[in-house]
Length: 107
Length: 117
Image 1 (cartoon, rainbow over the protein chains, first blue to last red):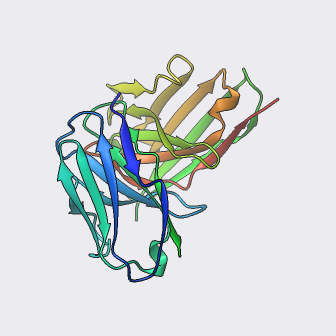
Image 2: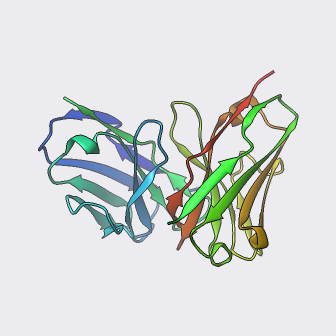
């Protein structure tokens, strides 16, 4: 199975900050990577697929980049509603695998 | 509007059986592959199982292979997960998840399964 490693596992940030979350795959996955946002008590929500394509309705402050084994999710200006946990997921092959999550907390 | 509504969760004893259901609406269910994904309390997301649109292909996580069975009824717009011989470590919220090009584009709200004696 392809292992997905996210970093950091958590951090604190302030509204307006530019934040970057990284995700590394244990082998090359081309651009078969998705990012999800999950708030407490809610189901995950798709933000980005194909490593850099924004899902319809997702604010443009979210962006994704990378290919192969190294990927990033960037929030250009953190808003109050963005405090949540973020997961990357590879869909290059089954079993589908997720990163361990990155919790973004209010500083 | 795409809706996925899970049901069937609850408290189950280790070694018993439980069947989860997912009712889909707002899209042509028979055109989409589907997944079950779970999340143990306070933990991350774990993919459980996949079924293709016409049930021709199924996959399972090693952790549930041989114990869980995924199925669907396209006439009823429904997805199922038969959980046999559940273990304490299967305790989780189980999400029904629509697949599009293998990534999940819509998630249900989940149903909690607690395995305990």
